[in-house]
View 1 (cartoon, rainbow, N blue to C red):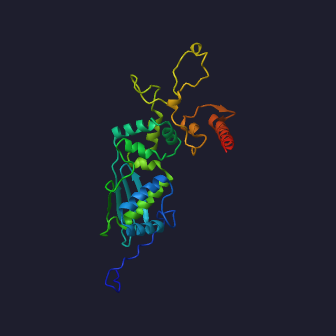
View 2: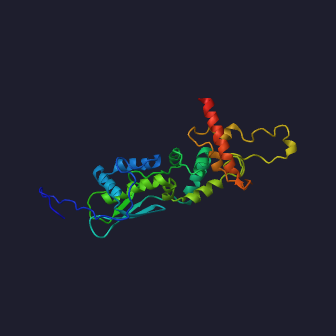
View 3: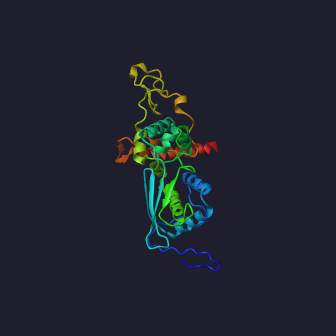
Length: 286
């Protein structure tokens, strides 16, 4: 390691990597969506600014060789100035089956949150749902257990910082990885949300979480007078949909019916109609 004129050791340049993972962001902040920015904001609040800056440079240069995310653990290898890459690990608490059962119940109780998750979206309010269950969604200052095999004395080192920034961009691509890191993979969560409900009303024997379209099964002869009325009360429908929600959000959330018209799936025929109606409604409102 070369010695500078002031007597301090100068940092050696990292070995150039071919085919490493490069951050998409070339300048400024890393992280585009609210969930990845939330993660980065926590890091920048608790970590050394200088090492985070060097970590961003490593991430943009492609010094991270690989990155693997599993329940409660992220593992990566980062090429530094020495021939052998450094091993990096970032651990958080992964919630267990009982904790996730309570989270799924709380998420399913909010019809709009459930619909957005089933449609592949991450509602910002999900963080409040986690907090309401006493379980943080994002790790705080003491919620990250980080380690790197490098000899750097600073913490987190630039190798760890590079991995954390690339992790944020990974969350940009798939917000469900935030939940997978906490112990619930995407398909397992969606299957659990689809299975919630059962038509019972909370507070009644055997009560559960009512689904949005659950109605009592009553013979038609007893319903002639009110057959065309809604089977769900306004209270059960909950608040109106977020204006920023896509017009076909309900179609995305429901299980697709196995019905086709001229070999075209029914949902593919209904989506343009939903979008047209939403556009007309917006024009009238304007």
